[in-house]
Amino acid sequence: MLNPILANLLTEPVGVSHYVLVGAFMFTCGVLCMATKRNALGILMGIELVLNGANLNFIAFGSRYLRNDANTLGLDGQLISLFVIVLAAAEAAVALAIVLNFYNNNDSVDVDRADQLSG
Amino acid sequence: MDSIYWPSFFFWLFSGVACTFALGVLLSKNIVRMAFYLVISLASTSGLFFLAGADFVGAMQLMIYVGGTLVLLIFGVMLTSQDRFVEMRTSSGEWVIAFFIGLMLFFTLGRAAFGVAAWKGLDRETAEAVEVERTVTPLAMGLLGARVDQLDEPDAAKREGMSGYLFHFEIVSVHLLVVLIGAAYLARAKRKTGSVAANA
Image (cartoon, rainbow over all chains, first blue to last red; front, side):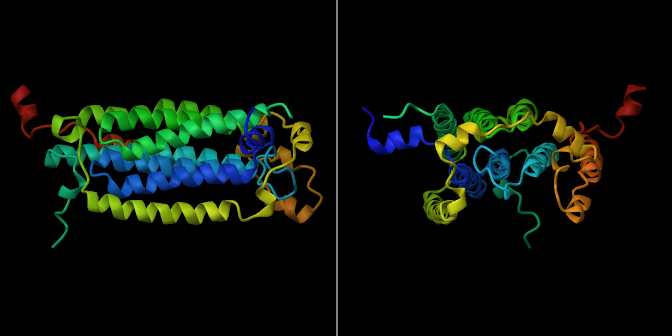
């Protein structure tokens, strides 16, 4: 026998709130990843997580399964999230090229060593 | 007792996997494991996209993100993975500050997520009655400049503004081309000066 809270979670449809909560969790993980990692590629992974959390919100606000009224984003949410996916690919390519250049010049991927501009 | 509503079950399954491995990316010290956790996290996010009715975006998430962008990242990890960079530790003071900031950020966003009554979700009968058509054709027509999903919009002035995303699509295409040429230029192999003369 399932306990009541768990049963309620499993028998009722989820809403936009649940999707936004998952998106918020991934966003927070990404932000902390960007803040705490010293490896430049770890920071890139944090950026991917942040973009993915934002994408989840666009999909949730556009979905008719989660909120079937006149105020959904409809197809616009999905179109915007497609643009986000493409821009994330472009961002990853450029950032990776910069990291490889930094690695070639400094023989390191530690972002704490990129301090030549500090006076 | 009601039977299990399977979309909710799969929502909790996929979101649990996505959140667990996102946390794994954050907490892992090893860059190779972080890359692998990120692959799993983003792949199960595409499952969430499928559950929300966005079939084309979910497929693109799997193909472009997991199949393209992350493979690029893993190549970056492989190219730079000397022993001293595989595990880089952060000082515990920074972890404490980051933990409190993250807790505050997540608390704020979570309060906002459950603060709006219209976001609570449909009841079961309504949700089971929702019919969603496949999104590939409307998305492609929207990218080509015709919003076939908005033809029944009653307000003619609003219909003028819903002219599709052709211009944005062009901009993002040229942007991607320029960025990839720039990335190839930045990451090209360095030639020693005089190597042409040495080869001749």
